[in-house]
Length: 121
Image 1 (cartoon, rainbow, N blue to C red):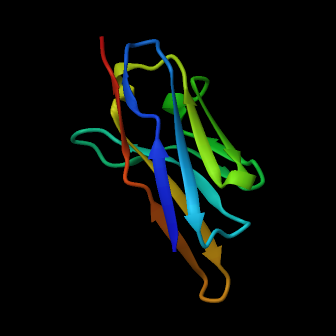
Image 2: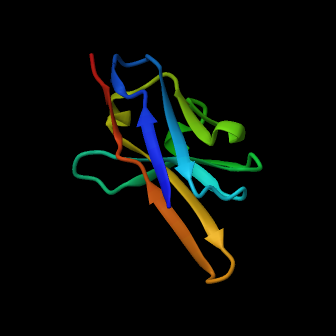
């Protein structure tokens, strides 16, 4: 079991910045992927950015050049630096952790509670 605790959300004006943090605890596998997804009102949850333990990253096109995902493997923590925020970035942001379990050939997937990010003037 993996627990994820998120922090850093809040209200910011367009063009501003926020940094989200997510700390994982529990049965952490060395080989894993952590990342951020978001869900805006009336929309499906969508990928924002992910990062493997090795540092391979993936970003949604809408945030490329503005958001940066990073992680501290020693702390089992992933960060999302969000710059030049836009109103369309407003959403609940969810931290995600997953790893592949070789024995049963399944991906084990865990979610944080979510943190609200509101971009408004």
